[in-house]
Image 1 (spheres, rainbow, N blue to C red):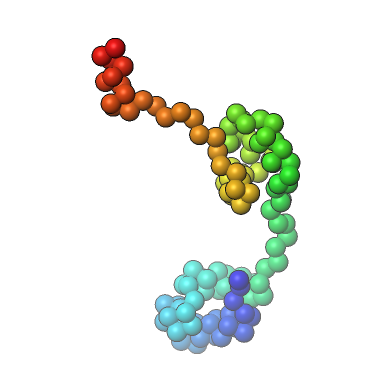
Image 2 (tube, rainbow, N blue to C red):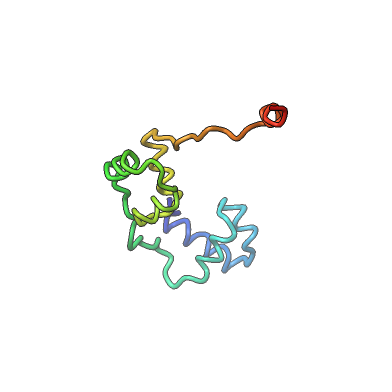
Length: 116
């Protein structure tokens, strides 16, 4: 959520009149980095997002998981043209867990195998 234009103007006015970015940040409870960005901008109005991230087609993802259960996560993300984290988040929301393989033998099992 972006800060209001009125708040931005008051913060910039405070910095220009009193000169302390740190004090203005504490007074208005705004991050210093935000104030530095606002000072370097031509306009204080919030920027409009030009392009949103593509939505992942969940039905296609679900059918792909059923058809190709052995596919690696990175390969599935590349297939859908998204980042692996986006694919992972979508699967979590759909309550689809990754396929669990049999665990590697533990120390006890390894010792038993050596004895046999």
